[in-house]
Image: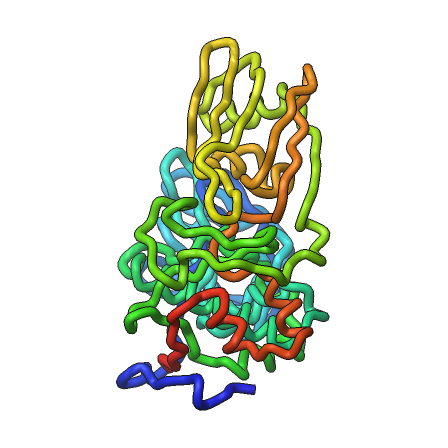
Length: 367
């Protein structure tokens, strides 16, 4: 439940729930589409170009200056699809609630964007970012955090084609929704975090390993109190609080090459300039061609965030492989999800959890 004393109204409230645009497919030659229920397709100038009921799964692609849906060709550079059935549009086997836009890109490639109201989006994010069985106050804290992040992105990307890449937040349309989660999102409807009455990028991660990091240290952004890092004694029960993994040097070199970083015959990898949570700000890679430094979180994402769990690691050269021994999972900035769950289990309410991980925030209702 919302504790009213913790919530402020942010001036004149929005008269309706804002919409967000989410990039689902980017710069691909093809994607899969299916539609359930009655649907309507409009062209670039909002004129109806097709309508029907139930479209079996088919490929979408670009050719001859237009968009192909199955065996039909539409001479438009953009199509918008709506279905009367909630969650009736399926893209790459995932169902979505909102309007779907198919846009031509260069070289006969396409992108697919969903436009939906932000509460439906947060409903889809919540069950993908946290286990649905977790404590309600941890889930409420996550809902407010994700909403704050999405609203911040909407603000700074106001005039862009899309506000959010689906990879920025775990989002699987309606796949991980439930009645319980929908009620939790509804409990916090319209509530976001602000600092000095400005919305900010509310980063979060799985497990910090003992201390969250300053946003300047990890992402090079201006440091503010809510993103400056705090001690965390709550995530020690996470299975990711400490870990060890062995990655072959050839696999590391291949991943780097895929990201246009060419290094061969790696000898060592070292996380340097550790922050308060021991996450390296930079990574130094020594090889036969000398040493190279790069942003530590960029390196982690190149190797794969599920392969190298964090940049808080020590590395040991094992000949053909490197053993990484580290703490935590994620970039380490903002809310620690396992810490939030532990705090909730200990009786902390969702507003208290947020004010712990994001010091000096205010909680405000914007719609």
